[in-house]
Amino acid sequence: MFSSARQKLIRDCISTAFPDATIASAQLLTGGLINTNIKIEFSSHRAPVVLRLYQGDAAVCLKECAILDLVHATIPVPAVIHVEPYGIDNSGPFCILEFVNGKTFQQLKRTNDLPAINQAAACVGEILARIGRYQFSKPGRLENDLTVGDPYVEGADVVPRLLDLFLQSEHLQRRLDSSFQRKLHDLIWSWATQLQTLDRDHALVHSDFGNRNILVHCVNGRWQVAAVLDWEFAFSGPPLLDVGHFLRYESRDTPLREQHFSRAYVESGGSLPDDWRRLAQVVDLTGLVECLTRERLPDDVTSEILQLITATLEHCRL
Image (cartoon, rainbow, N blue to C red; front, top):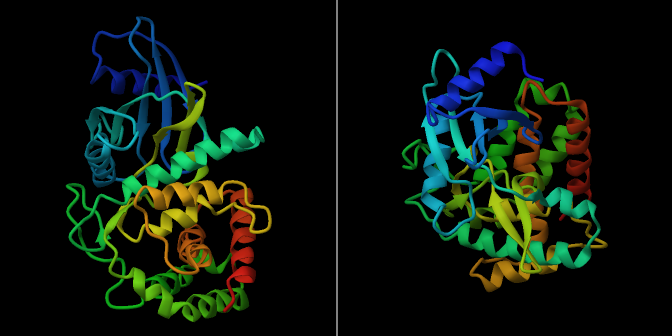
């Protein structure tokens, strides 16, 4: 249940796009660690929508909505219905999005339906290759108008230096002891030569391309991607980061979806370098380690991230 103040906020936000609509129900959608997503159903026959409340500033809201508008023609994403980047009555930034039916890839995995998982994984590979076709002028941060701003770090060896930057975080340092930090530093720099080939990549990178942000559904007997969600961290850079993130939980000994995903990715125009599986894991370390720099992180999430980092340290030694 929402508090009376939150209920009023929801009504006020929805009325900016639908002034005459009556809300029948408001349901908090789970899965997001940062922003708040609320499914809104109406008393009329109007289709349900999602009210997305941002913790970040107006720029985050504007950037994500600009990306959704950019890719909507070729990538399955929710349609942007209304945007209020500066909020109303101190609400903070929010937007109203199309509600897309489907289950997360995480939920599909838990069914252990191998044909369905394989079909969906192949479609994810195709969709990720399409995302990589969006190219920018250079690598770096995406501004709210989708121009490319400053790089995350200047000069060469972007990935190792970025990870070293994350290792300086006080929040990370209270979660990892100094010997563990040293192992991460040594591993990432042992891959420096191979990682340099990614420094010049300037494709659209989702940067949170995980099981929870990919909705799938069955259409005419085949599983496919219904929507790719949560684009707030997107930037211009190497698509291999998204490859590594999607395969983050894939077992090396008993792969479940990798061959279906990677085959469709390459057949759809994606490029995979030599030793790409381990290289993608190493690149994905930046995302895992960045999570540990956040001030607030649930204990179960922290434990899960540490397990993934430890596995990468074991599998990717040169």
